[in-house]
Image 1 (cartoon, rainbow, N blue to C red):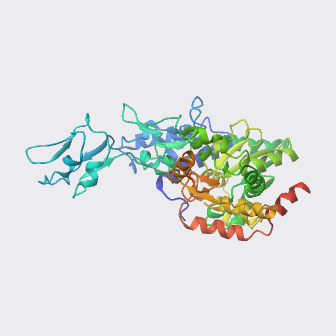
Image 2 (cartoon, rainbow, N blue to C red):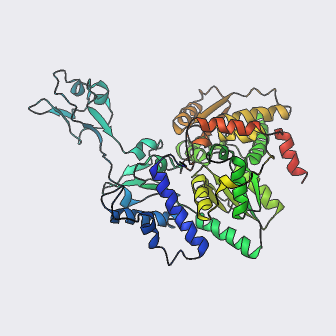
Image 3 (cartoon, helix red, strand yellow):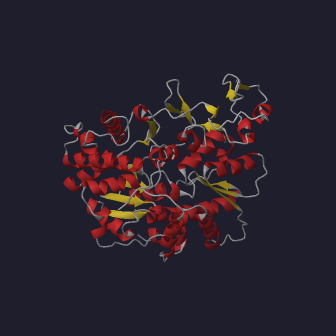
Length: 475
């Protein structure tokens, strides 16, 4: 039964599962060196040059599963030994060059970087090339390729570079922790740090001492994951793991939709604050637009703040698709509300480390959020919720004109237009991942059907935004 899109994800999951298993048993320290042998048991390599390198890479992945480099504030890190030095260096002439007479490539190059040998085969002088790509566009044989790393192609903020030793490197000043490079790296050489050990410690202490309750806050995009089971079985699995209660981040989305729609009507223009990677992008690439970012905290933070207000000693563990959430919970405005942030990949590892087969469990239900809170998980859902929030608060006279953006490329266009005062919109809904949260790097699976699944989950809701928020006040 397939649970992941790629073998890289599965390998990452195996490490997380084994680390979690040993942590629960209290034997992680003494069995640390045994984990690579369990994951790579034979002597025949399946992915790399030799089994010893495979195990060495697993060893580095174990470090990431245990929190990674504590001195590095970024949640995204490069595993140097796993980086296979992907062909880099920009544009290069391939074997497809036919030595044609037209020499369109040379004519298109304004920098004199292209020369020809005695066979009329083109060559690019790297000391002159500026990687503009003009030569590649005019080559009739498509013989000039842009040899960028997959991680560099995936990173839309240009935070991934090639270091002098040929290994990928991340520029923390540009990185927004969206995790796009993590998902796209074909060697699994870039990974998000895991705080799964912190979650296990919280759950174990709660079970042993009963000094506090542990709440799971689940992102609405969970409806698009764990496709091999029913959503209600996933919720029951969380209870079996030791969570006292499950709260919908979608309920926090209702809170945000109500507050953000009112804020929009008062200010006349607003940039959404729900996606931490998008907010980070605004801060780093368009600092002059930061004053337009909504003052509201994210749905995760909003519902977690409510839980802490009702149960001050409780612990809150967020579970969602987002690697950037791991950085968000360290922010001053959020750190008091959320104790640990996990991805769906890590939740799967936790289930299996405890040998919890969710397909055998009965179903539990959640019915606290509105349809609009739940569809925050897909692109356009936030704008729909803000429109509904305006209506329910009697602010329907405000003419909402949203610019819905999924993926940094779309976000860049909208923000650039706003910076030049040519944007025909008064609300920018920014989502760093393609498709919205359903495309997050921490998802088990990705695809168009994820949007459909979130929509179906939303339609199961029975409350309006106002009713959902008011129910909190009545508690």
